[in-house]
Image 1: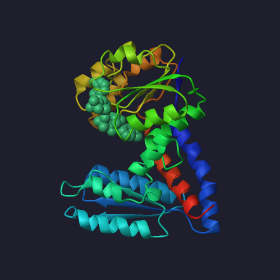
Image 2: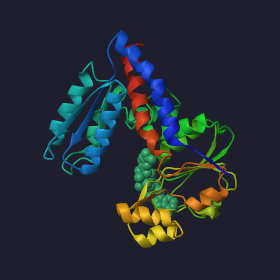
Image 3: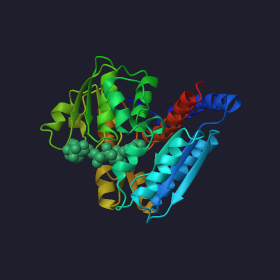
Image 4: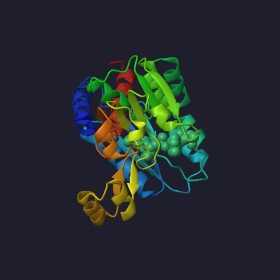
Length: 305
Ligand code: NDP
């Protein structure tokens, strides 16, 4: 039986480790401060920001949401970010994406002070990752490392294959695995013989965004598979095909109108992998808790604790 890598359990463990660090900061100086910038009324962005601010408050941080109008200009938003950069009570700034089309997203993300860039996506922090220097790490890739380490899955000397090369997930995961001495290959939409390359992996990371793209043909028996993909299936036929007419999944589809699946075929994972992350409940829960960890790290640096 493969090991199911339980992201909810690891998230809860990391949260419990953060609580005393937050309490210590609050007792010595002040609680960590977090500012989330939300522009417009995109319902998904509103949900993400609400979850992030609520999680930080539940942990005892001082967080605030800046809700700004959809019509904001690049210059106005730059002024707000610059003000947050100078505030001594703010350790982490998160600008929720996407921004409206009139706003220059690259300029805004570049304007966040690197020491407050708790998403870890500023080129300064990415450069530090490339150079092996300590810095704020992107949250999802940092969560994947936590998952592997806490389940004691060896990384050094192993063959790792990362499918997907986004700045958000694929590239930083590959760099983090390389930093831990894996032998890393990155695949993308132009890779030839994707299945053959994936079959070489002891650790296979799928960050593609294509439902059940990876099949048994892609998975070496006993491999660890980290399925980052979150894909919403919105047709009954697709649910029936991917989940092989599972009565449970079809009932869930009738109830909710959609069902989630990762980038790997769930049956192939169960049959071939040695360990794997389920979707949902694998990588997903770790992203927000690693954001919290970045805020605490940043506060400890700012307050020299
Ligand atoms: P992007 O769309 O930015 O990148 C997808 C990558 O997959 C690209 O590099 C693309 O290649 C590659 N790709 C697309 N099709 C294929 C294919 N047929 N074969 C091989 N490679 C292919 O996605 P993200 O990295 O932002 O996200 C990936 C998935 O992870 C999504 O489902 C997203 O929802 C999920 N996600 C989950 C998170 C979590 O917390 N669990 C957090 C962030 C993302 P190319 O570069 O050539 O176009």
